[in-house]
Image (cartoon, rainbow, N blue to C red):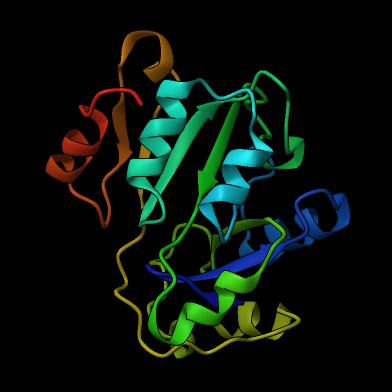
Length: 188
């Protein structure tokens, strides 16, 4: 369990079926519900997804790091365990790591991640807000103090490269005005 720039999260090796199933069981999450892959460095995320269009990569450069999860086209079928239910879509997150969570920026490997709450429950802003069964089931607990407590905004960029279209799937920490400003900027 770790602190991010929004809420506490659970993370595991994105290519380990056993670890992903364990994370889902711990949360009580439906196995067909996708998760996001989190990188702790934007350059590493962009390097891992070379098939992204220049337009989409430019948008990610303007949006990330930050409290945004982006839904991207996944033509290369990357991170299939994170894409259950929709293998053509990849959720990507790169948090802004400042203050007590800044040391996490040194992580060079992505993780499959989800908020550290039971499915359907509020996302935790403090370690003590995480339910006891979830805390007890985690291998490691990192306490970053009190976090903002608003989950990331989920933005669909699957049609952004071709049509410049985007939409908000889940309202969260980043507002529509800030997204519109970043996503209406010209392509690099």
